[in-house]
Image (cartoon, rainbow, N blue to C red):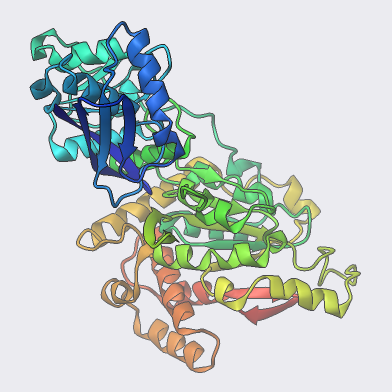
Length: 507
């Protein structure tokens, strides 16, 4: 006898429909699972056998074949346990197979028959809503997560027996889908009011937050680079609901999910010893890296020059395309990486290059340090800011701006961009491609002439020219203007210059 039930696999960060087929027929007792499953899937045989018996149900002593279709797609993880167990019960006549066809199920089985949550319940719920199934059955501890998807009947169960009862129960006998949890509340972020001096760096933070631009802070130790970067979350606009669902789904798959819908944009700060796979994703099966966990938020890379060259170069595609493609066994997975990079670095190994002769580095050390940050990587950064040591007077003076005021400016600029870019795929200036820049960025005549002169002089690459225009448009948005003026362009050009051993050079 044959039975079928729908479940879902997680491919990258997207749900993929999997049809579980179980056939039970006379023959020597055997339990075979086919369909390109990994070790966790193959081990499901023992979990299912023990769970069925410990739930007081009959495990058929026949030839059992379970197929996970499509067979060409790799399946990973224990989330298929419940689907195979229920299909087995239906194929052996212990469950109504017609009722099972109307449901989708997802969850891991314990040997006792209890259900355990598996990562990715939110993605599974999105897949179930897309497939328009009548009901989704998940472990009870994942029902609130799956309930974040609107318009879907989600049933939480604690055991295999409860799941079998929920499949055949009429709609009026099922508990209502629990209300979605409120957005997660997070602790208050550090405030910009703690910063003294640094007017240029504070302006750069606001520009970066307003347009989702990549930012490099470079300066001697103790000048406040890390302090500035860690206050970026306090001025970022809140997540929209669509973005919050996207971020929460990635957190669920990546194993960092906590109860409720994400409220604050991600802020990831990996250590400089991280590998390229840990940063952009990889492994077997491929898992999202820090770049994906920072999607729609901030990836902070402190001591940028201490990261390995291979790790830094792996960032080039994610920064440019907003996604990273990982190929394993002729199978490609795509992870989203639409993050804002904020990086901090010292100008030389000792950190004091250009400061009154305090640098103790040999010329070879300086050249080696400079080569750690390649030209192609720096060309993908929009803002290059030299963070200087604040004076005694600045340390005693009041704060230049606090986070509330900065966030209000950023929110106003983002709203202007949302309105202007409503007919494009970009959400902010930092996401504009070359065609978007030509379409949405308008220069005043003086600004256009100055940009042409700078490009003809070799100060900018073609990519750098596009990034200058995006930053200049964000400056205009912060001031409530549509057209880019000469001051906007000059400021954007000045923020493309990097200090190397005390001298300003084009990035």
